[in-house]
Every structure is written in structure tokens, then in C-alpha cells.
Length: 67
Image (cartoon, rainbow, N blue to C red; front, side, top):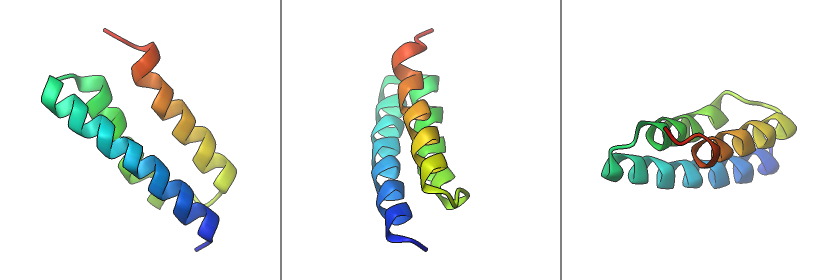
């Protein structure tokens, strides 16, 4: 693996852990699911550009979608 992918994956997984904990404590489904996906998806992406693009999109979903 590339160092760049590892660092981006660590960053987005850490943000995902924060979303997951927040969603679980507040009983909100959108941050919970986004956090779960943010923690898992870096294992399946092999391009740094795609990793960053998907990560930014997933981080923005809880801010723009509030049911």
C-alpha cells in the first residue's frame, strides 16, 4: 500500500469514528451510517483521488441532510 492511502484512510476513518459515536449517542441514523461507511470504505478504494473525493462527500452528508 501507498503511504498516501494509509494517511488519508486514517484521517477519514477517524472522522468516521467521531460521526459514529455522535450518531449512536444522539440516536441519529444519518451520522451513524456515514460514520460506519467512513470507517470501512478506505479498505476497498485503491486510488487516492477517489478516496479523498468519496471521503469529502461522505463527511458533507450529515451537514447538508438533516431529517
